[in-house]
Every structure is written in structure tokens, then in C-alpha cells.
Image (tube, rainbow, N blue to C red; front, side, top):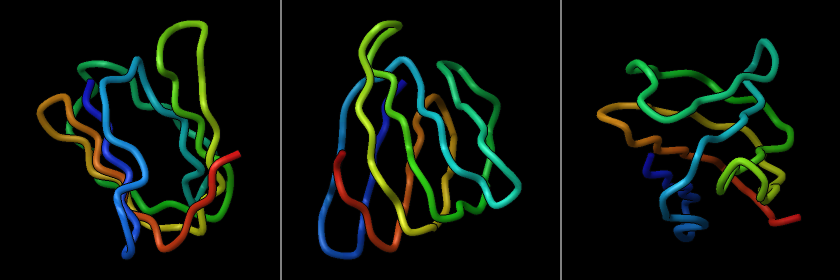
Length: 83
């Protein structure tokens, strides 16, 4: 699955991943390879990028939206920092 994480200032992440765990406004949820189309609002919290089944990276995000379509997840956030 292709993941892109964008802020108003820059592209924070772009690459193939196993999945991504996101802080939705109603709680955490996960998007994996070949997920159904989805648009969801994100709250403030920690985003976990699953590079593969054993490796992950974390980012603190300030809220935004995610769109999943045709095996691509686009995360639009107001602000983010790596962790």
C-alpha cells in the first residue's frame, strides 16, 4: 500500500507500507493493504506507520483527515512531528 503524509508545509512521508494506525476522532483504527475506500477525520494523537510486519515509525499529529482509495492512503494533517 502506498502511504503519503502531507502537512501544509511539506510532504512528511511517502512510500510503500504494510499499514498505518491512526488516531480517529472516535478512537484508534488501522488501515492495511487493500483496505476498502474510506474517508475519516483524525484527532490529535500518535500515528504509527507499519513499514512491514516488524518495523514501524511514529509521528505525533495535530488532527486532519485520511483518504484511502485504490490501495493508497493519503493523510492530510495540520501539523506533525517525528518520534
